[in-house]
Length: 396
Length: 88
Image 1 (cartoon, each protein chain N blue to C red):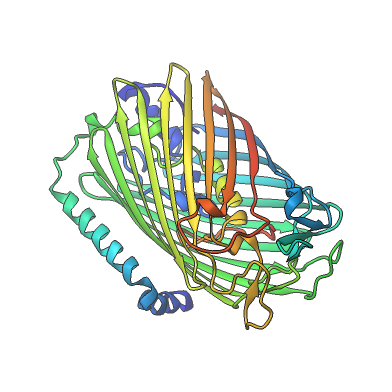
Image 2: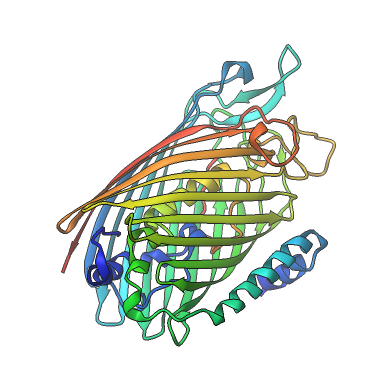
C-alpha cells in the first residue's frame, strides 16, 4: 500500500511497498494495469502486509415520478476486503485476497407506461438479499528486467459462480525508461437465477470470457510519465439479464478499449496531477468515453486526493426505453442507454509508523442530458454514494 | 485461440475504423518517445511518489472496477477478465 514519505531515499523504500504484486493482480484491477515506470518494480515487496477495508455502497431510491410498482428502495451493498501479501525468498511473492459483498434492495424489472404516457419502472418486489464471497491468490516471479504473475480467483453467490485465471508479464527497456506489459485471462461463469420476488425463466446457463491486453509506459522526464494500453475482451454464452422481464441480448460480445494516462509531479507543491482517459467500443453498438482528473496533495504523513470523473456512453443497438419485443434482440436495461455520469470524490491516507489508514467518499450521478450521444432517457438511471475506510499493517 | 480469431475479425470491421487510426497515432507517439533525453536512476525519486502511481491501490481499483462494471455498459475490453458477478 501507499506510503507518504518524501524524497529519493524514502521513495525507494516506499516504492517497494507501493508496487505490491497485487498492483498487477488481474481482474478488475487490470483495468488500470500500469506498464510500470520505475527501476524498483522488479523486486518482491520487502515486508509482509495485512489489510482490512470496508466500503458501503448505497443507491438512491427511484424517484416517485418514474416509479410504477414494486419497491422504490434500490441496492445497498456492504463490501469487506481482507488481504495478506508477502515475499517468498528473493524472487517470489504471494498474495491472498478475500472479499465479501452483502447486498440488499430492489432492482428494475421492466419499463412500462404510466397513466400520463411517460415511461415508468416496475421494480422487483420486496428486498432481494444476496451474499458474494470471492477468494483470489496471486503468485509473482521477479527478475532483473521484469516480472510475471499468475492469479486464480473464485467467486460464489446464491445465483452466480465464477472461476477466473490470469497471467501477466511486464518487462523494461535497457535504460528502464520504458516498460512493456501484457496480460491474458479467462473466466468461466455459471448463472443459476433464483425464483424469488420475480419469476425467472432459465435454470442454469454458462458464460465464457477471454481477455488480452497490451500496454506500454514511458518516462518523459524526472517528473512526468505517460502510458497507453489496448485491450480486447470476448464473451459468449448467456449474456442477457435473467432478472429483467424483457431482456434478450446476443450470445456473443466483443469489446475493445484504448486507455491512456499521464502523471506530472510538481516538487514545489509536493503534489501530482493525474489524468486518465479511456475510449471503449463494442459490437453491440456501444461507445463510451471516460475521463478522470485528480490532484494528489502530499503533506507530512497525510495525503489528500480530490478527483473528478466524467463518463458518457452511446446506447446499444437493441436498447429502447420500452423494450421492442418485435426485434430479435431487445432490452430496456438503463445500463445500455445513452447517458452521461459524473463522479466527485475525495480520498485520503494517513501513515503512522507501520500502520496506514485510508478513507474515501464519493458521489455518482447520471443523467441522459449529460451524455455526448443522442438517445432517449431511461427512467431507471442510477445515482449512488459510496464510502470506504481501511487499515493495513506492514511487518518483517 | 478462439478469442484471438474473434479479435482479428472484430478489429478489421468498419466500425473500428476511427479506433484503428487512434491506435496507430498512439503507437507512433510512443515510438517517437525514443528520442527523449534519458532520465538517470538517481533522478527518478519523484516518479516513485505515491501520487505518481497509476492507481491508488490494488483493492481500490478492484472495488471501483466492480462498481462501474455493474452499473455501466462499457465493462471489460481494457484488461483481463476477473471473477464475474450476477450484479444487477
